[in-house]
Length: 270
Image (cartoon, rainbow, N blue to C red; front, side, top):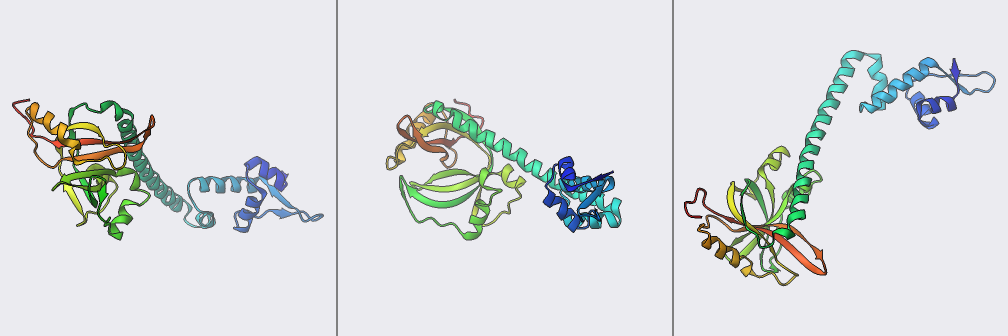
């Protein structure tokens, strides 16, 4: 049975240009009709095209398909498929991690406003902190971020996984970007001298609205320290805050942070 190029295009749902491209690459060798020199395709041509299309679906490049079929076919096809399997496995692992991260951030933003002024204790996972800039309220020093660190933090793969944090030290806010260690490890980011390791902590937490630009004042944490003392806790580390988000809500500019006050474990007086 013979087919013209239009019929082959319809059968395989590919363009005539792509069929001609496969011919150019040696995947098929259609006959030419004597009376008009038009291409004529037989059933085996269509079978070979079907295979080539599927090979591409398995991420085998067109330029490699002909060589695949001409020498050590079975060993080569297994090698190609194993490589593609490894790539897909790596992509799946990353997407699974990203799915977990997006769910985490969405939940944080969903509940952030409703926890203003509420207090709870939770475990803050170990993390790595990259310092970006110091500030006092809404006044900031010069940002200092080495190029090699910027390339790590702002790579397409890593961008979704860091949080904006600040630590309160010496009456200044040390702003930076922080990775939970589990994300850091799974992303295979190399450790370097420009980051700080922060171990797991148990923290008294509350959400605070820092308000409009210019309204941020260091006394934002005073009420939380008073609450901590009344409940019998003791501050055991550096006060820090995780930025939940910045944006307008009901004609008001919100800068929500989740305040973390490290406390002693196993307190007798609570």
